[in-house]
Image (cartoon, rainbow, N blue to C red; front, side, top):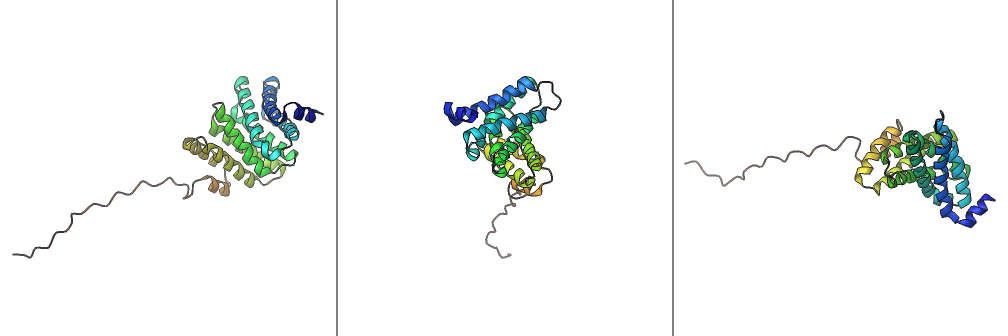
Length: 224
């Protein structure tokens, strides 16, 4: 019944907009002072996003938009209540990925989409894009492990989504996000290789000094 009302009143746009507000209100109203904040955020986000995706009926198409909306609401709530940004955004990422699994979505595609949404949402409200990207990727990895999915594949997909979204913000954002993601994915060498620019992890070497110019040889003069 609730699904039908959501579709009838405002369609997809209203459902997506309400998801962020629901998570924000839930964090502000219920989680202040709780010890297990991250776990509570995971559960709140998972239920909210599951309901939203069921209402819209478009999991693949709407994961970016609903993620952006939910991350924005969660970040604003974290600032309002005074809880950690890393803890909050990590919990949101875990909740979204688990929700996508609940409605039959594909994990790697969802990982890419939700981290794109996280970066875009953080940028729109002036939050720390690199820190949000890092914690979102960490949340994806934990949720993938919890769901029995391939953690490496999910981490790689999430990192690619973060870098793609950062690319629309400029090279400074790309560099900052890339640097923190190398730490976030830890020992997953395949993922690190995908994150780093081609050519290896060492910074580019300084240009070699130009060879000393020698004076052109003139015509040889026979000895007197």
